[in-house]
Image 1: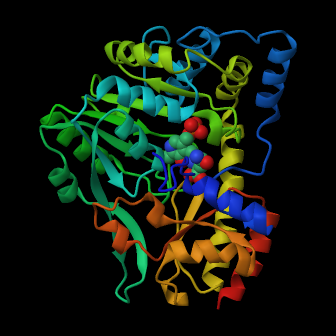
Image 2: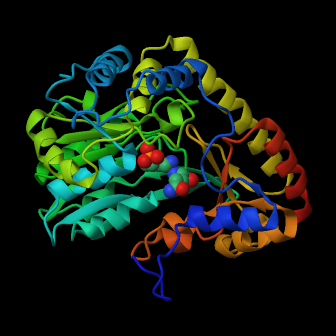
Length: 392
Ligand code: PMP
Ligand code: GLN
């Protein structure tokens, strides 16, 4: 996990945010929103601090948050989750993923990631002594060779999974591509996992930020129980990425195994923020809709701006990010473009190659793709779009 110079290697997000700061560029790199989040959520946390709820919460999470998570799973997905035995609150989805992998993966076992993948997965698989195996997403093209979307390559997935596979990590809605896996894809993944006795660990942090119909949780599929470990987080849904309140839902024996690890990672944390998130999960549907539709407007703004700047744009179905192909502008290396853009035109972004595995084909296939965050204010996006016209 160290860089060649023996220091901590910054993540691509830290690197590009530092570059944005030092050059004064608009930061469409790191995925954090500009809007403050629903006031009910912020007020509930503020009141919890004022009321002195500032000591260690219980290991599984405060009871009111676990009850709110169970009610949320029932309300949005028709799932029946026991707040006492089937939920673990975590310090964000990141700790949830770390605790799950450290609990379930033995050294030498394989973990399949859909490629491109969120960077933390590779690091935590390595910490667990596991071996990461990529299952590449397909990049689809139209008749003229322009990219149109990403799709699950079921044959490649089947090839990646073996009896040595301990877990498949499934991120839907997907970072960086904004792809949502449909029911047929999820069924295929679950079937492959079960054939090989592997777990499926899901990362659903963008579950509410969907523009193309509702998110389908893997846990709603028949046969998921006991195989699927579901992870989500409040950061994106309520625009509070710095709070780091996440949760895991799974069968009781899996939660127990994960809890044994989580107990010694952080034990517990974020007491007053847990209160805020509990309030948020109980808010009316209009609050979730407002976050989604405001984000969709900004996605549309960025998509049309990137197109007018000359990029080929793959319109995302969900999430914080829009992926664009810089090849039509003459840039074949997205990483190099991202290193140059802040200084040259005052915009920071992240290359999709930062999410691809060197062991898979997508590092080459997705080399000219760049990820832009549309979770920023309409004003920032508007300014960024003006600056991007100068890439011509
Ligand atoms: N998974 C994905 C796919 C993400 O994009 C992110 C961060 N934005 C995380 C996990 C991390 O979530 P958290 O901040 O809740 O740890
Ligand atoms: N998940 C955020 C992104 O994809 C970044 C989180 C981080 O900085 N590690 O941009």
